[in-house]
Image (tube, rainbow, N blue to C red):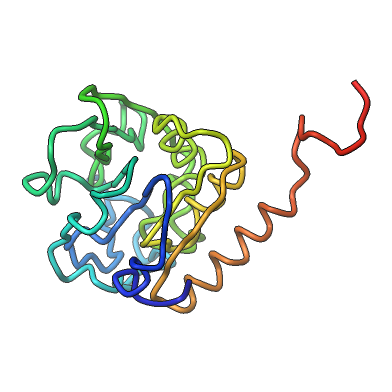
Length: 213
Protein backbone atom coordinates (compact mmCIF):
# COMPACT_ATOMS: atom_id res chain seq x y z
CA UNK A 1 0.00 0.00 0.00
CA UNK A 2 1.15 3.54 -0.77
CA UNK A 3 -0.27 5.82 1.91
CA UNK A 4 -0.56 6.54 5.62
CA UNK A 5 -0.37 3.35 7.68
CA UNK A 6 -2.84 4.72 10.23
CA UNK A 7 -5.48 4.92 7.52
CA UNK A 8 -4.63 1.47 6.18
CA UNK A 9 -4.65 -0.22 9.61
CA UNK A 10 -8.44 -0.97 9.75
CA UNK A 11 -8.12 -2.92 6.48
CA UNK A 12 -5.18 -5.11 7.50
CA UNK A 13 -5.37 -8.50 9.18
CA UNK A 14 -1.98 -10.07 9.85
CA UNK A 15 -0.27 -12.57 12.12
CA UNK A 16 2.65 -10.30 12.97
CA UNK A 17 3.89 -6.73 12.77
CA UNK A 18 7.62 -6.53 12.06
CA UNK A 19 8.80 -2.98 11.50
CA UNK A 20 11.46 -0.30 11.91
CA UNK A 21 9.29 2.78 12.58
CA UNK A 22 10.38 6.44 12.70
CA UNK A 23 11.74 7.00 16.20
CA UNK A 24 11.29 10.76 16.58
CA UNK A 25 14.97 11.57 15.99
CA UNK A 26 14.46 13.94 13.06
CA UNK A 27 17.76 12.58 11.75
CA UNK A 28 18.78 13.94 8.36
CA UNK A 29 21.47 11.42 7.44
CA UNK A 30 24.37 13.66 8.39
CA UNK A 31 27.58 11.92 9.41
CA UNK A 32 30.81 13.20 10.91
CA UNK A 33 34.29 12.70 9.49
CA UNK A 34 37.76 12.40 10.96
CA UNK A 35 39.27 10.26 13.70
CA UNK A 36 36.05 10.04 15.66
CA UNK A 37 33.76 9.89 12.68
CA UNK A 38 33.01 7.89 9.58
CA UNK A 39 34.00 8.31 5.97
CA UNK A 40 36.41 10.63 4.15
CA UNK A 41 36.33 14.38 4.54
CA UNK A 42 34.23 15.90 1.80
CA UNK A 43 32.12 12.78 1.23
CA UNK A 44 28.47 12.51 2.09
CA UNK A 45 26.13 9.57 2.51
CA UNK A 46 23.63 9.02 -0.30
CA UNK A 47 20.79 10.12 1.98
CA UNK A 48 22.61 13.15 3.44
CA UNK A 49 20.04 15.82 4.32
CA UNK A 50 17.06 13.47 3.80
CA UNK A 51 14.54 13.26 6.64
CA UNK A 52 12.02 10.46 7.13
CA UNK A 53 8.31 11.27 7.08
CA UNK A 54 7.02 11.35 10.65
CA UNK A 55 10.46 11.25 12.28
CA UNK A 56 9.96 14.69 13.81
CA UNK A 57 7.26 13.31 16.16
CA UNK A 58 7.58 10.95 19.12
CA UNK A 59 6.59 7.46 18.05
CA UNK A 60 3.51 5.86 19.63
CA UNK A 61 3.54 2.04 19.33
CA UNK A 62 -0.01 1.64 20.68
CA UNK A 63 -1.76 1.05 17.30
CA UNK A 64 0.44 -1.97 16.61
CA UNK A 65 0.44 -3.71 19.99
CA UNK A 66 -2.80 -5.59 19.37
CA UNK A 67 -1.33 -7.94 16.76
CA UNK A 68 -0.49 -11.50 17.86
CA UNK A 69 3.28 -11.09 17.32
CA UNK A 70 5.06 -7.73 17.25
CA UNK A 71 8.68 -6.79 16.59
CA UNK A 72 9.56 -3.07 16.60
CA UNK A 73 13.02 -1.57 16.22
CA UNK A 74 14.27 1.59 17.92
CA UNK A 75 12.53 0.58 21.13
CA UNK A 76 14.94 2.55 23.34
CA UNK A 77 13.34 5.74 21.96
CA UNK A 78 9.87 4.84 23.26
CA UNK A 79 10.54 2.16 25.90
CA UNK A 80 8.23 3.82 28.43
CA UNK A 81 5.31 3.06 26.11
CA UNK A 82 6.03 -0.66 25.79
CA UNK A 83 5.06 -3.55 28.08
CA UNK A 84 7.62 -6.13 29.22
CA UNK A 85 8.91 -8.25 26.34
CA UNK A 86 12.01 -9.58 24.66
CA UNK A 87 14.90 -7.25 23.82
CA UNK A 88 16.69 -7.69 20.49
CA UNK A 89 20.18 -6.28 19.90
CA UNK A 90 21.63 -5.64 16.46
CA UNK A 91 25.42 -5.25 16.75
CA UNK A 92 26.38 -3.10 13.75
CA UNK A 93 30.18 -3.18 14.02
CA UNK A 94 33.12 -5.23 15.27
CA UNK A 95 34.38 -4.79 18.82
CA UNK A 96 37.34 -2.70 17.64
CA UNK A 97 34.95 -0.12 16.21
CA UNK A 98 32.83 0.37 19.34
CA UNK A 99 32.44 4.02 20.25
CA UNK A 100 33.75 5.30 16.92
CA UNK A 101 30.58 6.50 15.18
CA UNK A 102 26.97 7.05 16.21
CA UNK A 103 25.55 3.86 17.81
CA UNK A 104 27.38 0.55 18.10
CA UNK A 105 24.06 -1.29 18.17
CA UNK A 106 20.32 -0.86 17.77
CA UNK A 107 17.61 -2.20 20.06
CA UNK A 108 14.39 -3.91 19.13
CA UNK A 109 11.43 -5.16 21.18
CA UNK A 110 9.28 -8.26 20.77
CA UNK A 111 5.96 -8.67 22.56
CA UNK A 112 6.56 -12.26 23.66
CA UNK A 113 9.09 -13.60 26.14
CA UNK A 114 11.42 -11.59 28.34
CA UNK A 115 14.96 -12.50 27.25
CA UNK A 116 17.72 -10.61 25.44
CA UNK A 117 19.00 -11.86 22.08
CA UNK A 118 21.78 -10.40 19.96
CA UNK A 119 22.88 -10.73 16.35
CA UNK A 120 25.94 -9.22 14.73
CA UNK A 121 25.45 -8.13 11.12
CA UNK A 122 28.01 -5.83 9.51
CA UNK A 123 26.54 -5.95 6.02
CA UNK A 124 25.27 -2.35 6.02
CA UNK A 125 28.59 -0.81 7.09
CA UNK A 126 29.79 -0.51 3.49
CA UNK A 127 26.44 0.74 2.16
CA UNK A 128 26.60 4.37 3.31
CA UNK A 129 26.88 5.70 -0.24
CA UNK A 130 24.49 3.24 -1.89
CA UNK A 131 21.71 2.29 0.55
CA UNK A 132 18.19 3.07 -0.64
CA UNK A 133 16.84 4.27 2.70
CA UNK A 134 18.81 6.18 5.37
CA UNK A 135 17.88 3.71 8.14
CA UNK A 136 17.81 0.57 5.98
CA UNK A 137 18.20 -2.74 7.82
CA UNK A 138 19.93 -5.90 6.54
CA UNK A 139 17.66 -8.56 5.05
CA UNK A 140 19.21 -11.27 7.22
CA UNK A 141 18.48 -9.22 10.34
CA UNK A 142 14.80 -8.98 9.45
CA UNK A 143 14.70 -12.70 8.61
CA UNK A 144 16.08 -13.30 12.12
CA UNK A 145 13.27 -11.19 13.61
CA UNK A 146 10.61 -13.13 11.76
CA UNK A 147 12.14 -16.44 12.80
CA UNK A 148 12.27 -15.34 16.46
CA UNK A 149 8.55 -14.60 16.28
CA UNK A 150 8.01 -18.33 15.57
CA UNK A 151 5.30 -17.83 13.00
CA UNK A 152 3.50 -20.71 11.37
CA UNK A 153 4.24 -21.41 7.68
CA UNK A 154 2.48 -19.05 5.28
CA UNK A 155 1.74 -16.52 8.04
CA UNK A 156 1.11 -12.91 7.03
CA UNK A 157 3.73 -10.34 8.08
CA UNK A 158 2.76 -6.67 8.17
CA UNK A 159 5.19 -3.74 8.04
CA UNK A 160 3.37 -0.40 8.46
CA UNK A 161 6.60 1.58 7.87
CA UNK A 162 7.95 -0.39 4.93
CA UNK A 163 10.70 1.99 3.79
CA UNK A 164 12.76 0.23 1.14
CA UNK A 165 10.94 -3.08 1.65
CA UNK A 166 13.55 -5.07 3.57
CA UNK A 167 10.99 -6.74 5.84
CA UNK A 168 9.00 -7.73 2.75
CA UNK A 169 12.04 -9.31 1.13
CA UNK A 170 12.79 -11.19 4.35
CA UNK A 171 9.20 -12.44 4.59
CA UNK A 172 9.23 -13.65 0.99
CA UNK A 173 12.57 -15.41 1.54
CA UNK A 174 11.03 -17.29 4.46
CA UNK A 175 7.90 -18.29 2.56
CA UNK A 176 5.59 -15.87 4.37
CA UNK A 177 2.89 -13.60 2.97
CA UNK A 178 3.48 -9.88 3.30
CA UNK A 179 1.59 -6.60 3.55
CA UNK A 180 3.56 -3.35 3.58
CA UNK A 181 2.70 0.35 3.76
CA UNK A 182 4.96 3.25 2.82
CA UNK A 183 3.96 6.91 2.67
CA UNK A 184 6.99 8.19 0.69
CA UNK A 185 6.41 7.42 -2.99
CA UNK A 186 10.07 6.91 -4.07
CA UNK A 187 10.69 4.44 -1.23
CA UNK A 188 7.39 2.70 -2.02
CA UNK A 189 8.49 2.19 -5.63
CA UNK A 190 11.86 0.80 -4.55
CA UNK A 191 10.17 -1.52 -2.05
CA UNK A 192 7.85 -2.89 -4.73
CA UNK A 193 10.81 -3.52 -7.01
CA UNK A 194 12.80 -5.34 -4.34
CA UNK A 195 9.87 -7.49 -3.18
CA UNK A 196 8.87 -8.41 -6.74
CA UNK A 197 12.48 -9.37 -7.38
CA UNK A 198 12.47 -11.57 -4.28
CA UNK A 199 9.28 -13.33 -5.44
CA UNK A 200 10.92 -13.98 -8.81
CA UNK A 201 13.85 -15.84 -7.27
CA UNK A 202 13.72 -19.65 -7.49
CA UNK A 203 13.21 -21.37 -4.13
CA UNK A 204 15.39 -24.30 -3.13
CA UNK A 205 13.48 -27.28 -1.73
CA UNK A 206 10.16 -25.82 -2.90
CA UNK A 207 7.50 -28.47 -3.46
CA UNK A 208 6.74 -29.03 -7.13
CA UNK A 209 3.34 -30.18 -8.29
CA UNK A 210 3.73 -33.64 -9.75
CA UNK A 211 7.38 -33.91 -8.73
CA UNK A 212 8.78 -37.26 -7.72
CA UNK A 213 10.55 -38.17 -4.48
